[in-house]
Image (cartoon, rainbow, N blue to C red; front, side):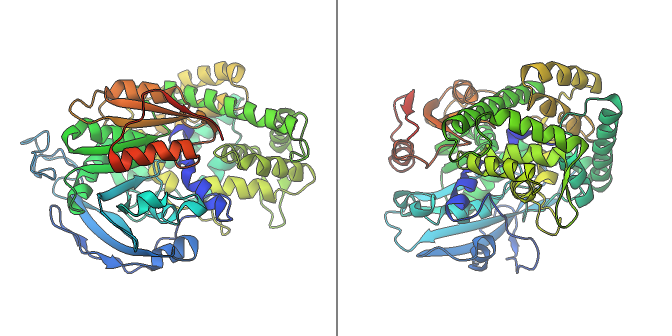
Length: 533
């Protein structure tokens, strides 16, 4: 099981839902003619790539031009044999060369321009979170415009929209080391392995995954951490020709943006950090925060069900219906037509998937009702969308990268004994989500390699940074929004009193405030709150 607090941002889910899908479906890797990567410090060669949106969503957006490029970045920015873009020597100059010294990663970029572009300000760099989410795919989704839940025309007409896949993700030197069978076993596993034997078997599965990735990547694993990726962002800024960075980051992308602001405060033009992660939380604190957030969001879902019985077939007691479905799946999972079993883990992840957007609530209610009738297809649709598992049982590298990046960032990893204590404690405090979040800590405990922690301080010298939070956010609970703003010192809080994961551009109030900041650098009054609808 993976840590929810750093999973894919819900914004792309909302965009694709509007377009008639369920949750994001990312483009398959392979088969593309890739542009040659530009060496570090040189301008990339952009090539037309209208095939990318066709692969991602099946068509191109009207009035949009797509160009792709690749740049090379040092695998390790801190080895002292390279300079960061702009000429500042990397920290650690003169240090003994370590893993990755002199080697490079390739970073995939897409640049999307509107035919209506006027008074161009520069580039707007996009990161959807994860870690492991594809910024290339997200940029494609967002440029379908307001009618599809994408970026407002006012923004599309003033910026190049630039998406990138961070190091280790999708098209950018991807981390690929977890077999599909192991991911099936992980997602399908009992979300609360209560007996010692069940827990021990879960640890063994995670140990097997860690050993496989360690055997393939060895001492390179810490190089996938957030600080290295933030330095890559500065290389991207230089490659697209912007003196200063304009950035829109969702979920984990807020952590990435906050890290950039600390490293390069003078190179910030405007940062929007939506669905904030508090960098100062420990691994345990972050997991407990997320357990609390999902319990709160699930409570909101159950209250919606009780008030909307005509749309919620598991009303009036949705919590009892979901809990019963998970319990039944532990002993007698429903089998699909192709023989696949909807075990407790798959039912649990269907619940997780549905809570990322309010529009997922009705899908969950239908799926649980259908499961009770012997049809698990709705459960699999929701869970597979979260896991990025296709109909052939193949996964993207989202969770390979998610694990590599998360664990590279973590200096303190709890013991198995501590995890067992938390599992018992959180079972009482957060009954549906707590035990799973505690058990999920095993993944980094059993992960090989060292760590490369990111900075956790102020961004002195940066202009005001807009930190956006949603009061009903399950994955990055709202309490982290003011915490991130306070840590940075220059953060300004904008609140959406809504449901789901991330806020921009879902309501007119949020959209107006963020647009004014991105375009005119007009900062909303600190503490501005926007109603749910």
